[in-house]
Length: 91
Image 1 (cartoon, rainbow, N blue to C red):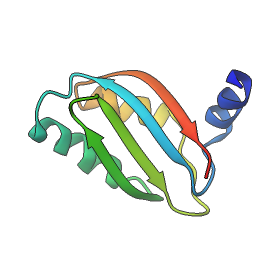
Image 2: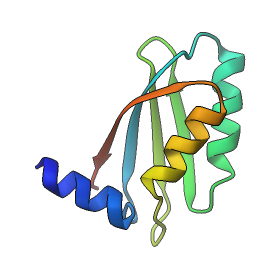
Image 3: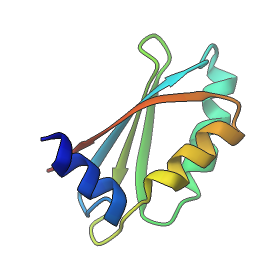
Image 4: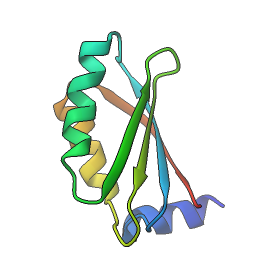
C-alpha cells in the first residue's frame, strides 16, 4: 500500500481524490484561514476543510486535476507550519 501511495505522490494525485494532511502548528482559526486561502488558489482544488483540534487539512480535487506532493509541502512550509503526513484517499 505504501508503494501505491508513493507512486501517486510522485506522479501527481488523481481526479476526484481527497488528500488528508497532518499539519502541526494550526493553533487558531486565523492561522488556518491563511493556509486555506493559499491552498484554494491552487488549480483544481474544489474544497479545503481544516480541523484545528485534530491538525488535519482535507483537500478535495476537481475531476481531471492533479497536485504534486512538493507543491503541498512548499505551501505548508511557507505558511509557517510543519507537514507531518500526507494521505491520499481515492473516491
